[in-house]
Length: 89
Image (tube, rainbow, N blue to C red):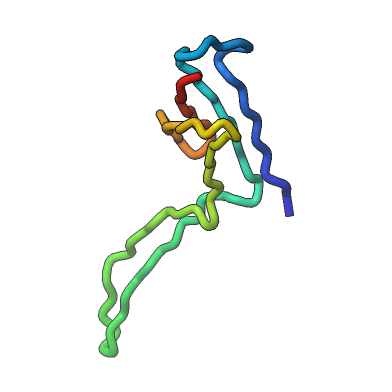
């Protein structure tokens, strides 16, 4: 089983009170891969539906941001591999 990987970076190294902070988190999990499921429904007479394909990610990673200063971090974007959060210093 692979270990999930996450890196985080702030948009600046120093902030003044009231400055906007942008936190970028890049993350991945080698064990979490998209899975395609194909479903065909067949009745008792042998009639079958057209195949339906669904792609899903089983047990995807989620990112949550908090700090010990009580700031509210707002998610700006998250595409499943890179997330951006915004807060005020």
